[in-house]
Each structure stands twice: as structure tokens, then as C-alpha cells.
Length: 297
Ligand SMILES: Nc1nc2c(ncn2[C@@H]2O[C@H](COP(=O)(O)OP(=O)(O)OP(=O)(O)O)[C@@H](O)[C@H]2O)c(=O)[nH]1
Ligand SMILES: [Mg+2]
Image (cartoon, rainbow, N blue to C red; front, side, top):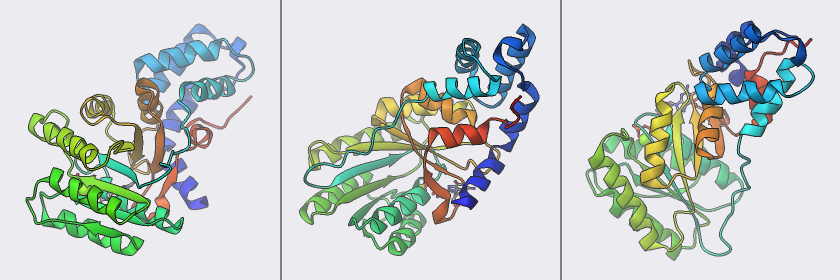
């Protein structure tokens, strides 16, 4: 826990330092027009995006107290509240994991499988990335370590067929959780995006109501391009939640706020490294505390 937060704080230090320079410690009423413009620029530089930065400043200006507290409350108001994950009354919970290449999907699935297993749930993982044999092996290592089971086919197999088999088997054997991995793809690749739509369709044929959740894994260091990525994946795969990884790297934290606000999608988890402990449920308040500078007048 302690190390998770110190990694998060370290990862967000660039955004926080920018904001520390731009946000004077004064109270809301004492700040000049120019200071507010500086704050807005600081938020844009921290990857909050132009529109959200503008509304955050507008909201903060209506509040009282210190400017940092006002910003914090405005940010909290902008983040959609994630409801607790709804597990179906009977039958498995099916999760489809999607995203651009190398964002951390497979690693995150390994971590989630471990977490669910530790909660006493049986977990079946589908190796839907059939492009490279290495992708299946990488997943197999995580799944083994997690104490979960895996469905795989040969290299080059149709990912929709792997997804179908996984869900069918998971239902027949009454697993609690089914997680389907997919190959990374760029949102502009029509062929691969159609393939993803097919994976989703076929999962619903294997088991009505599934997938119950579709989580897109986003690399926190992507910058503003993450916005079009999420837009396109949501359109094709029906994303219901986000996981933002690599917040220990060069990423700027504002993207987390911008994505969840723009698309009304809850951020389910955030990642700050490659080990098991580096994935944690997203807590808006803790996150904002790590993003904003501490100096308060
Ligand atoms: N620093 C850091 N590295 C991470 C994090 N999450 C994943 N990684 C690393 O990012 C790299 C890519 O992770 P994968 O899980 O293979 O990503 P993927 O989305 O499955 O990749 P493809 O299947 O090729 O699209 C690996 O080296 C991971 O260890 C994180 O939160 N922080
Ligand atoms: Mg992968």
C-alpha cells in the first residue's frame, strides 16, 4: 500500500510540480484573472484537456476557501462515481479486456486473476491474443501464478473462436469469473476493430448478457491521443470501464480525469508498475490528492 502510493506520487510528480507553479496558495476570492488563467494552463499541461480544464476553473471560482481545495472539490465532482461491480446472481461474470498495443492488458489480467483468486473465486482466462505464441505463453505464466485456468488454441486461431470456447467452458464448469484477453490493436485499423466487434458478439452468443463488463486498458503516458482511442473502442467494443496503467512513468495524471469525465466511464483500476501490488482500485480522492500540490494557504 505505502509503496503503491509513493510510486503513484512519484509518477504524478511532473503534473504536480507544474500545478504547484501555476496554482498560488491563496484563497479563491484573492486570485487575479491572470492567476486563474495560469491555473487553467497548468491543468491543460497536466493532460486534463482544454474543455475540462476550463470547466474546472469555472467551477473552482464559484467556491470558497483555498484555491487548491476548490480545485479538488471541482475535480471530485467531475469524476463519475463507479458503482460496485455487479456480479450476476447465477452463472459466471464475464469480463472482456481491450486496448491498443502494449498498454498492459495481459499484465493487468494476470493481476486481476490473482486478486479474484485470492477472494476465493474460480477464474478462467481466455487467451484471445492468438497473433503470437509468445502472447499466450506470457498469459499462461500469469494465469499459473494466479492459480487460475486458461483456454487456449493454436497460434493464428480465430480470437472469436477462443472467446466463444472460453465462455462456453466457463459456463459449463461453473466458474465465477471469466476474463478474455485480446490482442492489442490500433483504433484506426478497421480490420482489427471489426474483429474485436466479432469477439464481443460471439461472447454474447455463448452466454446471454455477457460480457458483463468491457474494460479498456489505457497507457497513462499516451497523452491526448488516449481520447480518440477510448472514443473508438467504446463505439466498437462497448467499453464499460477503464484501467489506466503506467502512471509510474512519464504520464501526466490529468488524462485519468479527462477520460472518465469525457466518456462518463468509471476508472476501475490504476497501475503504477509491473508487479502484483502495482494495480489498485481507483479511488478518486486519493488520486486527486496525489495529483494536486499540497501547499495550502
Ligand atoms: N511501468 C509500468 N509498466 C507496466 C504497467 N503495466 C504493464 N506494464 C508493462 O508494459 C509492458 C506491456 O504489457 P502487456 O501486459 O504485455 O501489454 P498488452 O496490452 O497485453 O500488450 P499487447 O498484448 O502486445 O497489446 C510489459 O512490459 C508490462 O510489464 C504499469 O502500470 N507500469
Ligand atoms: Mg497482451
